[in-house]
Length: 260
Length: 266
Image 1 (cartoon, rainbow over the protein chains, first blue to last red):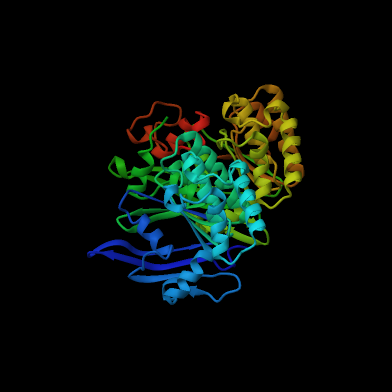
Image 2: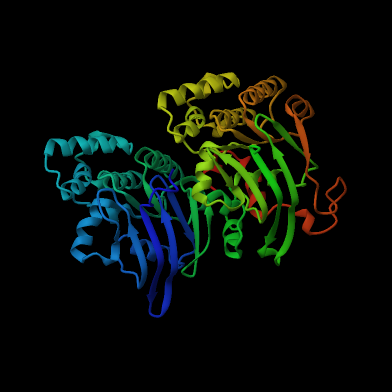
């Protein structure tokens, strides 16, 4: 049962200070395979800082980020040698940015965008790379005939799906998403949510998703963490947090959702 | 050990945005339900019947008391269970069917019904054929199976929801008025499905307002009494009693009726 299996990710007492202001304060949580953890909270609550620490982009000032990976000793992300960390991360981690352009190479074809992470991980056979790229285009509902087109010729929703294909092609252990549906119109967003739900189940992904949108959070995540001023103020099953919010700020957040 | 053992549970809602007023929901309620038993919660609107079901499902936090369920070969106290354990409990042990279908944009009725089986790891083709058989049994026209239920009528959505709730072999089902807007013919089918579950040893804790439904399925009734004055048939007398649920769940219930966007907006 999953409650005895080691979590992929264990965060303990993570703290990050900017100019004496606590951006993240004593944050602890675990994440298992097949689990989606949603992080909600207002701008400036520390969500993105936390994500950057998890992604290996910004060192925390205190605390541990422990990864348990198959075929590997348990390791603390920020206690690895820098070279080791930079070698390890692309093989185990994918980051899906809010703006697809931050996660794509715009001067490289769609197929090139998908096969590049594979080449970084040592795959070289051109024919295989191309067929894997076509397979993944299909997987994210993009016509494989567009394999040689540049991402600039894609719509916003397609660019976002291409970014997801580029991120997931290496079968990462851990996926970090920063507002993946932000800035997309509602029908495009619905398609992306459906796709993400399917991929999480199919590949048994462990996902941390930062979002402003409580509907997205409820639909995608098993558990929610509510952040305010750098602290986790409430956490639990997504439906519990949203239907029976305990903290004043969570109640405010939930009651502020506009009805359509 | 009964399948479900509820002892001295209590809960109140604290409305921080309304000056911290406290609204008692459930106090000192205890009961047990045995294997294969169908127990109906009795009480006027606002007495907290739905709150009890949501506490057993873990959607509402239980402040006092314990909610013990048999999960595989273990006994779990839902009142204090870790969310990870709770996720497992929901996947294989406790199912919940409300009045409202939580539609997911773009997902067809067939896939929505098959989803709980797929989550248990069932083979795709098996899950789909079981889903189709149940939709057929509940008279959902075959022409609708491939469509997302957002545009379905209330009764059709409710039947998709029942199919989704009944497709698995969960030993404990929580039913919150799942047949509220069904016609007599389809209510009869729901009664048959419930009796079939009972015969298979499934335990059910339900809320039904419809007298025919209650008589047909209930083995026993449990009284849930309102805690606030003014809710026993008379007009609400205090400001607090006008809001027996927290703002979020009020929003949920009005919003779920809206269909399409309920999967996206909270």
